[in-house]
Length: 283
Image 1 (tube, rainbow, N blue to C red):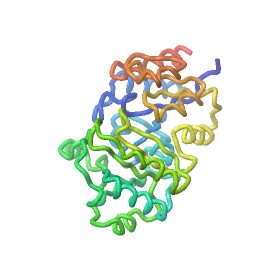
Image 2 (cartoon, one colour):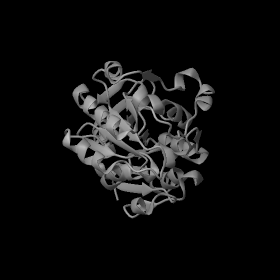
Image 3 (cartoon, one colour):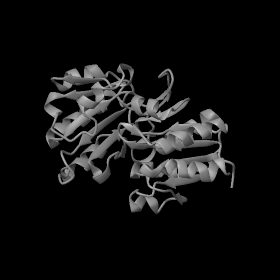
Image 4 (cartoon, rainbow, N blue to C red):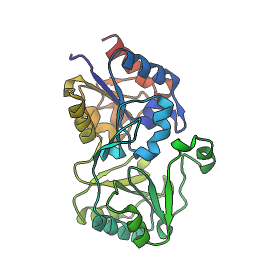
């Protein structure tokens, strides 16, 4: 087995204890791993703006892959090294579909999220405004509310990385025609970042965490077999299958565990730390 020279990890359900708490064993393992000369990079479905808080809590440095592979940024400065975006013409088509389907929508760039009043529904959100208000200002995400689709498109410009459709709850179903309609409008990459299929994330072609990790490894001069990837959800499967070692959390969905090279302890018991200890620090 090749020596691991790069660890990449998902955030939610993997590295983090919860949305606003870093798992302490994982933080200590990250520090020990980097002290041993092996960088640990975040690969997340969050935009860079939404990832700034957990990146700070976890003590991440260097490069990170965001928006399910649509962006690569420097953690310390926010400098964008790679940015894959949807054109405004395609975003308009997607928003019109969402309006007919009566679903909640958020469009994200690397730097902010945008809502539109006609597409703003009452959905459960893991991070409340009250919670965010306690964060340092530089870690708070930026959101804009627009009144019309035209205003939303103007705000986004040509910088949209993802358009996310959200269900109101786990029991609700997207209309059966929605997927076919989305696919018929253009070449998109599709994924979901929430358990139970609560969302549908629509991204430009050549997106996804697998492609993001491949680009990251190339930038860092690391070979495929020298990468260890940690994750828990279906949107992690691409990078887990591609990496030299694919680690899945012990409390992850059985479908994801079936693809693992190694199943760690549950994420809230230090699943990433378990894998780092086994494959990097002892390796």
